[in-house]
Length: 428
Image 1 (cartoon, rainbow, N blue to C red):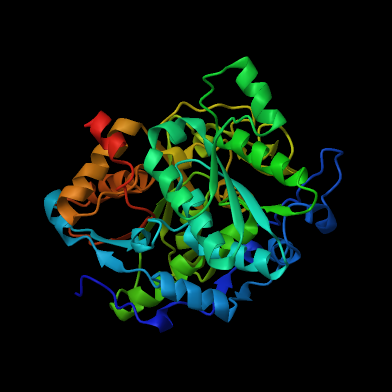
Image 2: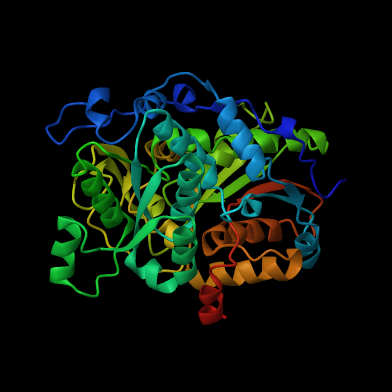
């Protein structure tokens, strides 16, 4: 069997896959704090109309604009699908392990897939600037690059713990021309209030979202908000990952997949790989086992409640029905900064609720050790976020040590760890 897929341009799909019309139950509406469902027009202060249309779309296939597709090809899509043969040998497993490697993209992760789309639609509607939040910096880096490609100014509120732990991500964002502020910051009322209470506040994604939204609302219409995960239109743009993987597996002669695995913060990279496999009923007779991995310190799916909650700390967003730890939850400053969100995507929450997706949680030390095993066998040092998926892959593969079964395990290695070396240094 071949160890690596082909990467010709025709592997990149011409459409995005939208799982919303194929969910096992209707997606609960966004709710205004007044208790009424949010109207599309009420979101126009935050998003361009084209993205709002995608957010509420009930079409399962949405065409990718040719300009977006050309940019994704220029940046390195399709990404490779690789068999982790050396990892299999070290684990002495009969399982066949494949990973979709998004770390080859310029900013080192899958986040560029939606950043390009969002920048394109904002620029097309005459937006001057976009503001956003970022945890580990993967999303902020991607949007910074996308903004530079489409002539948009970019302002990033980076969770303070990650701002201090990952200075090179900040430098990368600034190299692409973005303004970057540690969150909580002195730029917003939300940030100033929190810093007054605690000058050493570590921040959270919820707080950074609040600051980005406050910044947009107070811009007088010159700026829009850009989000890296959770909402439907964001997860939609990531579906290129799974759609490519399906084509690549077919070309490699792989007829079925038994496990599909990814890490989860808000849900974008996991959804990007898994949703096409769910929607297209891959395997036909018996679907794969879908495993969503989160950190034990931010156990939104495994210990959170399924209820309506704000998407940010200050309560500036509409209420979303999702698994949540509470919008005021402040997670510890773990190194997997991209997984520090208090909730998960509403569509992903429905799939967890209906037992289509199985959530699991792991401690940081075990996750980083799994990342080192992968680096020493396959040569790629995963981002701490992706190492959560690697840990689950190893645990499952070891179950097939010495058995006659030969399951296929597919996971998303959504980013490299070359700007996360301090995490491995301190935990080695």
